[in-house]
Amino acid sequence: MTVTISGKTQVYAVIGDPIEHSLSPVIQNAAFNALNMNCVYTAFRVKNSDVANTLTGMRALGIMGLNVTMPHKETVIAYLDWIDDTAKFLKSVNTIHHKDGKLLGYSTDGTGTLRALKENGSDPQGKKVVILGAGGAARAITYSLIQEADELVVLNRTVSKAKELAEALKRKFNKKISIGSLSSNDIKEKISDSDILLNTTSVGMKPNINQSLISPDNLKSDMTIMDIVYNPYETQLVKDAKVAGVKVVSGLEMLIYQGAAAFEIWTGQQAPVQVMRKAILEQNIGV
Ligand code: ATR
Image 1 (tube, rainbow, N blue to C red):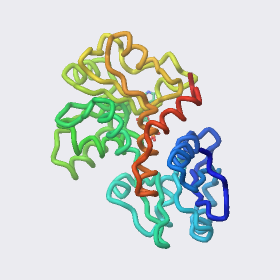
Image 2 (image 1 turned 30 degrees about the vertical axis):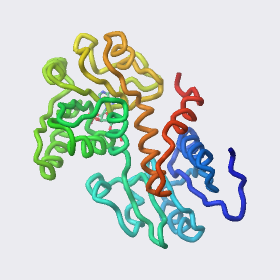
Image 3 (image 1 turned 135 degrees about the vertical axis):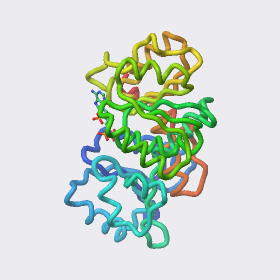
Image 4 (image 1 turned 90 degrees about the horizontal axis):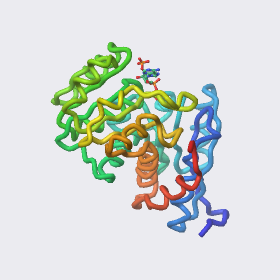
């Protein structure tokens, strides 16, 4: 069923720059339609210099929820009334809820990834997880994973960034966290007894579709691979993993579950995840 826009339609959107390739409108409108909610979700390209005006406009127009993507995830924080602990640690907000006249900020990137792993049969509880990368995505993902995993390893091209991230996590959580470089020795050693390997770097993204940080010989059949790059849909790492018989969780699952978390914050209702997944797969993105 498709919602008919009326005077009662509630408006949601994603803001970012660029924004035209965002899949969030596809996911969220599919969810609103499935639950027959009188809501619509669109995308606004917002310049850095217009972030403050945008949030003033959100209040004035009664826009009920926003997703926030690059490059505004940190900038929006200054204009919100409250942010949750995760967003505070990450200095990053990807979901804003306009509730009772207040703008509330959340980060669902990490919780989305955690849920993607769990729902796809690779619960990190008690497991050793290797993360490739130490940028914004890695920070969000490790923050959620460390709360459930037993041990975390952060491997990054710039080792000082891995160190910084590990130290910030250690200050907050009493867990085993180690770091390393992307050298073949470090990768081989750290992966050898790990359960889950998660790529958060942009390596393998179009147009560099033949690149992977992991040599196929280092993959083990009893581990799970997740690559947050979903463009192409199957990165070189994912292709190699499939050939080696390694379990794979698609990067699209992160997108679906961070969207599901935002939907649940806004509506208080359980997100129709299957419908959201189907909508995204029908886009044939990056294949
Ligand atoms: P995001 O928000 O997507 O995480 P980011 O904060 O810019 O983006 O982080 C990008 C990550 O990908 C970093 O870990 C980066 O490594 P450096 O810290 O050494 O820059 C990693 N990355 C990007 N291109 C890479 C490449 N060609 N090889 C290895 N790592 C790469």
